[in-house]
Image 1: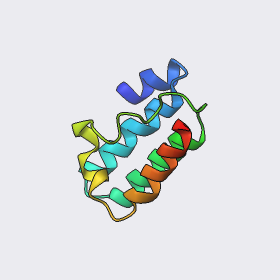
Image 2: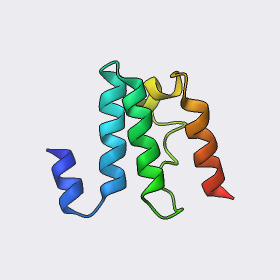
Image 3: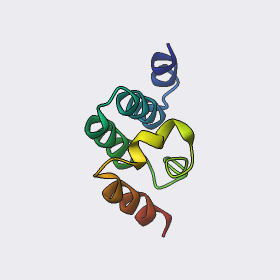
Image 4: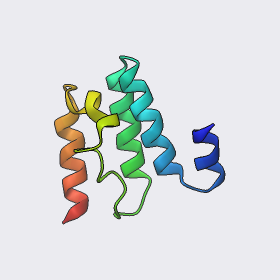
Length: 79
């Protein structure tokens, strides 16, 4: 599947973001937020995660209670 392909390609942060979206859409937003935060923690401060605020696949994460912390983490990477 997609996650295996991303992992095999060395795109571990992207794999975590796909898993985060899957968890969020399955009603497990807390797990999704944790995975998204791990994606940001384990990658260089590059464009990883920039799609979180806009990409439709992350919509359930944006409405979760802990999204503010994730958004702050993402913003801190941009400065």
